[in-house]
Image 1: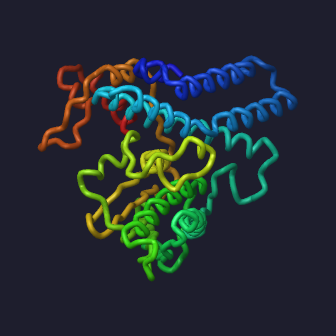
Image 2: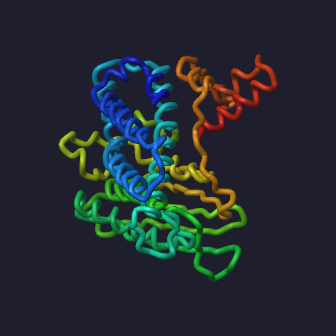
Image 3: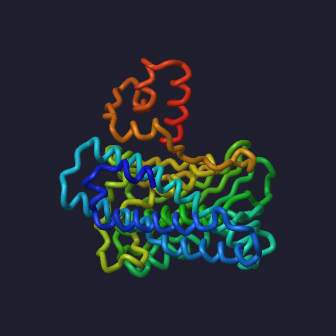
Length: 358
């Protein structure tokens, strides 16, 4: 809530952003009611019900905040600094949201009497079947693709377990997070394949998923022959203010569009990074795209990664972000400003930079 107030004033005035801010104020006040309450079964039950109500209230936060950014783009000319501030904020805002919803889901599943599957620990599956999640995400994305284009590419799944040959790959993970990432990737791949080859083509090349378990990482690679993406667009794909698809109509706010807001890839990358994984995109312009989801093979290395809010955070909203030069393309604003600071402050800023890049 404090960080929302650091956003540019013209964005804060957008109706959709004000609505999101009001939701957080209301939810925070409802949670505060329990701060000094005596713990009884009745209070715990009421707390659980409040969490469910809060979760339902915030269901459309991503779309509503996206609509607020669109309102700003339509009514104001956005300069480079404002765009960087919005990008920085949304990465942190959506990562925090992933964590909050994870906590709410975990609590309500464990203490709200909703747990049906004894294998799961709340929303965590200690034996997550990656192939099963891949197929679920593919089938649902295929259904959407068939609705839009009356055609869809087939799926090929390959599995390679380097640690235990021939043994199906299992991982301690939150299946809904992996599903979200894969669903977005399948939508992108299917749309690219159909539009590149034409919806009336006799045969569309399949989307190939390769699941590999190595020593440190488990990788899920989604490969398509959808014509690829120009290199000049690759970095933009993780920008919240960029989309290759037409914006979805406002009347479809509660449906699942095949594409539109351009938030699929950046938020999917946040899901991957939440447990110290990553999502990278490699494209051959004119042929196709490979997208790789990295997950930690060892669950004790997959602790949550969260943005930290402190005095340093607010500086990122005011400082001008310099363009990287050819010799240091990965340089970031936080590291560039360290040259004149003390070693102790450098350590703090390095930590903050790491959190900012999550």
